Image (cartoon, rainbow over all chains, first blue to last red; front, side, top):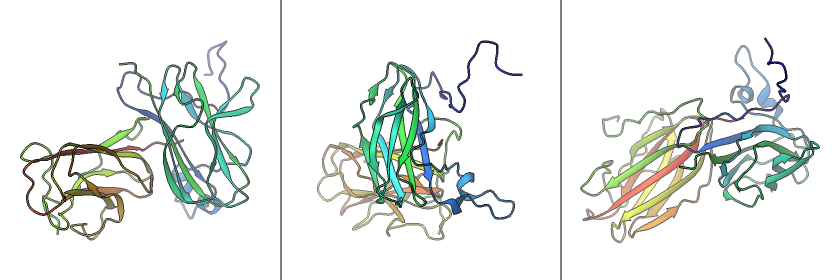
Amino acid sequence: MGAPTGVVITKGLKPWRGYPSVNAIHAIRSHIQQDPTKFVSSGLAPSPGSAAGHVTLTAGVPFHIGTIPQGAIILPLAQHVIVAMNGTTPTIDIGVKDTAGTFTGGLLAASAVATVGFTAGIISGALMGYTANQLELFIRLTGASTLGEVDVCIPFYIQRD
Amino acid sequence: MLTLLNAPKRGRTYPNMNAMLGIRCMHRVGGPGVSLPRGSPKGRAIPIGTIPGNSFIHSAILYVSTAYGAGFTIDVGGVASGAAAFPGTGAFTFPISTVADISAIAKLPQTLTFGYVAEEMEVYARLNGAGDPATGGFDYVIQFYTNQT
């Protein structure tokens, strides 16, 4: 059975998933794995990349990672470059698209991922803090990369207490 | 040797919950909370929780509510779950905080060196210092997230 008549489901977008009445910090997290060998299965076991829910990004193509509900407050981000990405000056952006479907960013801008390291407390994005609108978040890689592993976590709180 | 004192605390999480989870180590001299066997230069590590594999440690913060006095510090860190050797007084495989100062009242966000936890990790804490502190109280909170896109 499909969606009721008149309901438009945007293809490929993950809806907001949370516990509306829990006093906990929710989050959206993305684990990027650019090494194609991590997605090769041996025997019946799934590949380590897919088993762990990791994703591979195509340079320049925004990938949807989740939805932040209207009224939430977005808290400082953290990024861990576990394996340095190769290629020419690879960077990642996290943010939204405009009404025309063009990625405009807003949470993480041109963050370097060519060096291993952990960065916490990232608050530089213009969309940090209170959001009056529901935000469909995307992550985008700039610079083709065939090796590297990055984990990014975006916490947010939805209650007004 | 595995004893009641150093048996790892199992991970207690909601695997499909899109929420930040936490581990808290609360210590009060002569009061409630965990019992940390003090030692000099290093105390003995006590398990305070387990972080599932494929998690992401977002932050850690140390609140010292009552000063312990000069020379007292804590270490917090992890070892792979099921490791053959318990950390005891030795180095942690995955150090989170090393010789964090608890000599005075303070709020101390910790500088992490990693976020991604590839394999299930048991987390331990220990109290370092010479002589038993007459006073002291701290809370150490680790926030971590288990889900991902």
